Length: 127
Length: 127
DNA sequence: TAAACTGTTCGATGGAGGTCGACCACATGA
DNA sequence: TCATGTGGTCGACCTCCATCGAACAGTTTA
Image (cartoon, rainbow over all chains, first blue to last red; front, top):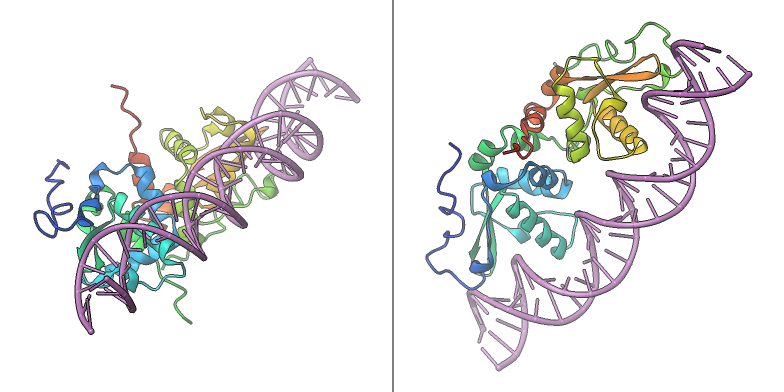
């Protein structure tokens, strides 16, 4: 079965009440994401860059602002929201920062192979 | 190695010279397709419908006009061209018709799991 | 309280691409 | 040659979405 405790680690992360900001953080489990939304999410190169950077480091160690992206902070915020609604990332407030986690196992179960393709994408090999 | 005889079955299909129309039929091997193009190709619902229909029948049995699609023939022609350039389908002229083949093994090798996701997509299950 | 930092929201803009109608090109058959 | 049937090409339109600047909100520290 693919039905699991979908309200487990997402919204409740960070404590029972959290802050007012944390309550605005809505998450979607990958199992509830339509294929269309998943494909749209990974079809954008900026979002794929976020996913690749995120995959290279431990969970909850990267805040949104620490990513090297060729877009302004408004656009960056938009992309993180898209990734969150597509079930690709999980976010948690840590002080003024918002740290991220790649939802690899859950997303892999819902869309086998898709995330692997994205993370296998090699940038221009620098040579 | 992923390098194989990429000029093998695509452009040469249908005989040495073929017709004048057949010479305009340019194919791209999946191994030469960027991930961006592959994702863009499968991100469109009309194109996914084509792929699903194509997967349900033997190769070279479906002409472009026989697909049940909610778009005009100009748009349909455009979508087939996109699928061809993305290495997802192979086309061959059969008289006035243009028959299609899903390049499943080649595409699977280049983008493992992606086509499976598309073909696994279940429409509203009708009940 | 104020300042600095992080991130979101809002409104507007621009470009990419899906869509169409019309016309064109090719193959078949009479 | 003409008619028909299939599919491609062209130009235009239009919608969606990525992008930005500006303003706003929450957190931390002074």
